Length: 127
Image 1: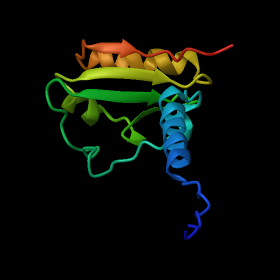
Image 2: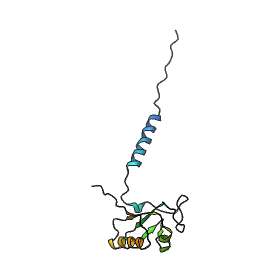
Image 3: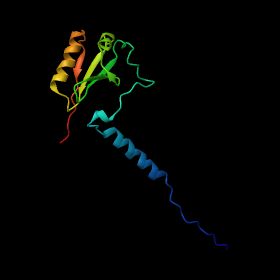
Image 4: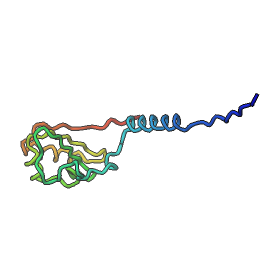
């Protein structure tokens, strides 16, 4: 009889890679960004330019910075932007350091421009 030599079983890396991808997806989905100022909001290929009109039903995000200025699509909010935002849903996201007077000023400007679908977004802080 001829004795067969068994090869030593080599562990594969495929299950390990699968587990790492599952963990990566889990942490991406469950992450909370406390400081949204770290996420750049710039006009890209999928984002309309600052000078274009908002489509009816479109959602616009206006951020109130720590110094009280309003920012839309990475640029300072202008009266022309407000005129072009008619029919759009507007979300106002104040920075935690934003002064109350700056937030009230932005909300007054939106109201004066005739925008009625305005919602104030508040980030929930974790303990």
